[in-house]
Amino acid sequence: MIALALALVVVQQQQPLERRVAAVRDGTVRFSYAARPGVYGNGRNIISWDCRGGNCRSRQVNGDYSDMDGNDWSSVCDSGPVRIALTVRSGAVTDLRAYVGGEWRTAAGGTDLGTVGAREAATYLLGVAAKDSTGSRAAERAILPAMLADSVTLWPDLLKIARDTRVSRRVRRSAVFWLGQAASAAATRGLTDLVDDRATDRDVREQAVFALSQRPRDEGVPALIRIARENPDPELRKKAIFWLGQSDDPQALALFEELLTKP
Image (cartoon, rainbow, N blue to C red):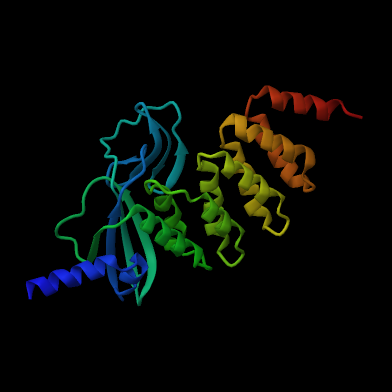
């Protein structure tokens, strides 16, 4: 009997995460996975990422994002794991809470799936976001913890979500925000493609312009300059010029001089 029980546990653990969550009709489902380097949290209401040398570039506190570049993070923080608590009602995931660090309360009810692979967790979470058409709390909150997973590259999936008109606008905007946070030149190329895509909603394209303004200067400024010069949408050109004005970059000043002095 013991051997049979252990065999059943192994089989359950080998099932895709989506199927294991779907087996719970009502209640709370929890799981954990490894966080990528530079991710820290206090186990409750603070998650920081891009942390190096005692400094964190960005932080989420109680659901609000902020740029913390140059500031020391002073909270007692752990480097993981990422912990997810899903609220399931009638077989549908209706809410999602993400934490980094800490530990689950031993008296907490619900179903604990234990530690899962980071890639499987990220894939599942982006699936929660991509399948939503109404902008549910779970879908909006799913992208952040997916981006915190260790050793996964997700910007191609984020681009798909950002371009998919079947996905709610709020979720697509969240995908664009995280594209802007993705640390690769490929993400910048994808953002400029998104700005140029006339089939994409205006507010999503404007969010892509903002995301470019948050990229490292050597990536974001040239892309914004190209938009300011070439994009056929005057509102997007204005947005690009506005963010260039915040950059204090010599290339931006040269563009302003060019625009102001041309006949």
